[in-house]
Amino acid sequence: MRHATEPRFPFADMSRVPYAVFLDEGVYEREQTRIWQGPVWLFLGLEAQIPNPGDYITTYAGDQPVVVDRAEDGSLHAFVNSCAHKGTMVVRYRKGNAGSHTCVYHRWAYDLRGNLVGVPFLRGIEGMSGMPKDFDKRDHGLRKLEVESYRGVVFGSFAPKPEPLRAYLDKPILDFLDRLFARPIEVIGHRRQRFHANWKQYYENYGDGYHGGLLHELAATFGLHRATQGGSRIPDKRGRHAAAWVDAESDSAEIVRQGYRDVSFAKSFDQRLKLDDLAVFGWQDEVGDGQSVRTCAVFPSALFAQVGNVLETEQIRPKSATEFELYWTYFGYQDESADLRRRRFQQANMVGPAGYNNMEDGEASILEMRGIRRRGSEHTVLEMGGRGPIAREDGHARLSETVVRGFWRYYAELMGYRPARSPRRARRRR
Amino acid sequence: MVSRDIRNAIVDLESAYAACLDDDRLEAWPDFFTADCVYHITTRETVDDGYSLGLFYCHNRAQVSDRVKILRNAAVFSVRYYRHLVSNVRVVGEAGGVYAVEAAYAVFATDQLDGITTVFSAGKYRDKVVFAGGVPKFKEKVVIADTASIPANLSVPL
Image (cartoon, rainbow over all chains, first blue to last red; front, top):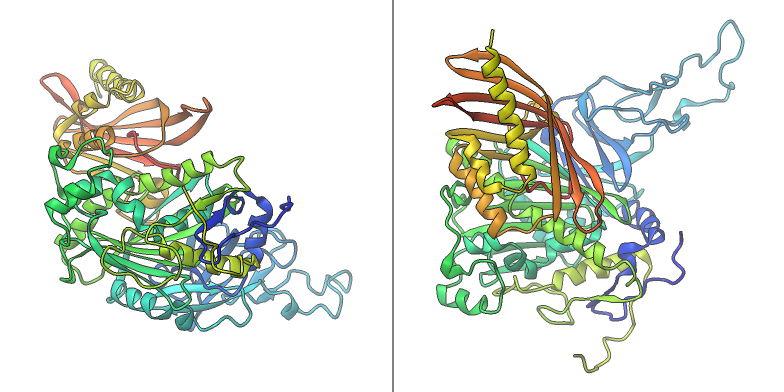
């Protein structure tokens, strides 16, 4: 399964990405070790999903099944959902409340911190059988993750001593989460979606402002987000995550007409699609800054967004090089008005697997995968917004793939793929 | 006791609804609903977990027909054929001329490039049917999908 030749990033600015990283199961296996179990923080869920002691959810950290729960003292814990005895999955339900977790096979029992607390017939019966005398339950707990929470957003890490979560997220992401989780939330639903595509093709989509006003014709037509609108895109100090937003009122009819001159939409803006019920576009500016869409991607597993009035998180769950699941969580604020809650529900028709916006993102990832089967030694082209440094962009930051290059830089670093040393050679391109 | 004629008309409605979608006559799909209809696609796990936000929600027929306009004119989604099998149709109650109906469904998707068919969604319909001038219409159609993780995307209605 290992790839014969290491995927090669030919330019230090990561403006070329080898297709092999999307195709190769050897690359996928290496990612599970070096990235997903590496020095990163993985998004696991929201504290609001497990408000009470004993509450748990089952989820994934990379492709490993994980339990996240809240112990008696309110502390958060996460551990691999695989018995220390024979690897059996211990917790078999999506969510629940439990005082301990017991494997069904031989009834080994674990406390809410993942420590082994019960082994049936540990000392045998009537002096016969049982575990060896030196068997120590303390040596056989579930594999634990480091857990930290910021603003009620729970992250876990397999690294023994990961950098502090706040440092990992850095200011642009902390600011984003401060705003999105400004008040106590209430989860209103989850959705999920399964793709025959590589998880990175979807992650890239989040940093790729360029596609937004092009792939998403409906959103562009009704101005939820358009390629001609301004906005900003801010990477963290290492360029591995990014926060972005759209300034809804920043373009004019004239700029839109000019900008979309060469775009082959089914309907032009002049003969705009007529809808009978515009509730799906009933965005009410909650903060008063005119930002209709705000998105934020945290390497490697988390996406956070405000789309109109929809508030959501997305967790990426890789399954193989060519398959992943996307797990969405939608929420509102506990103290919000009934009218605002209604808006969130109505606009939720824009997002998720059946939503006008996101059915398209998934399809784009799938089409990428379908196209590249025999192109493993070739490269994608990331040059919109320019080459070179990966830095904050304002103004027409939507027309950019810069932060996508930031993702690839950190990816290659963790994977041990050394990009070409020198900046790109000057050369003529068609 | 629901009359045989009513029962037959409701079974025929469910079959005609499926055939309309499978034949890609989406423009005719809104006609199966009353003007004040509710059309809601959710999942069984959403219902079990007590959440109210499902996958897609229309609170009137205008939104139903808007979905058709958008799918036809301004959306990108998987190029597939669909086949709905609707079975076990039961009229489970009636109050004031509104018939409560439940049925099981399975939807197969066929990728138009590869020609391969897979199970796209299995679940149930929980419907409310009224007769307007003798013609049965859905006043409410709630699709409760057992299939929680949507294969790629959900475009054509369930």
